[in-house]
Length: 77
Image (cartoon, rainbow, N blue to C red; front, side, top):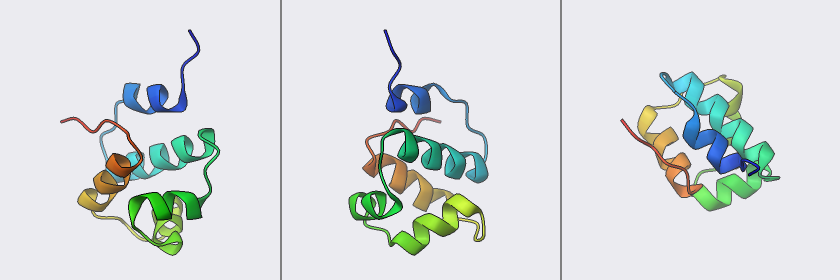
């Protein structure tokens, strides 16, 4: 069975905010979503998504988890 982008994300071991940001970027691209699409779905701005993905601004872990949850991804501790 072919893994979906969501399956890939949910199987990743993520240990830092940078890894969450990278995973969100990868899953967004694999899903064919633009930064604007993810911004609309998460309630964040496109500029915020860009900053997270490019690590030009360290995102608070809560904001990244919020973005992941609104993209229908599993967040577990």
